[in-house]
Image 1 (cartoon, rainbow, N blue to C red):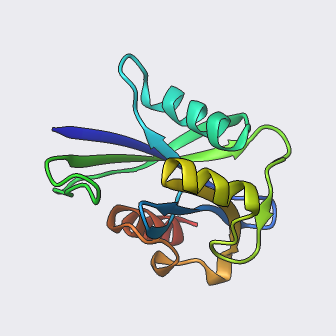
Image 2 (cartoon, rainbow, N blue to C red):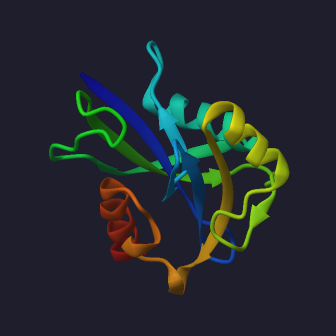
Length: 152
């Protein structure tokens, strides 16, 4: 079984990289914003939908950055192979969700969501000089982070 995920690399005017800190089924992950492709949906539309669902943020999807080119088993289901697609993204409006400065700094609302759904997330920016493959958790994200650093 294949799972297709689409992620956005969003940099702000101060050249900081947006990441999502997530608590999923007892584990903590720092990753790029995005999510799963739905049936009948294009990859760029998926990324726009994910930013809207997660951040209530309209984005412009830019250039393609990377698509997984090796086997990566899902961290959540060993019967699934992950195909991840990365694009640059640009915010078309001000970000209105809370932006944290400390990793995994979940507020009471986010903690309650975790209790109900066994997953929650919050967002923060990482300064460009501090950003690297070590800033993110998942193996494919590490490759995308390395490519971003090499390109910019």
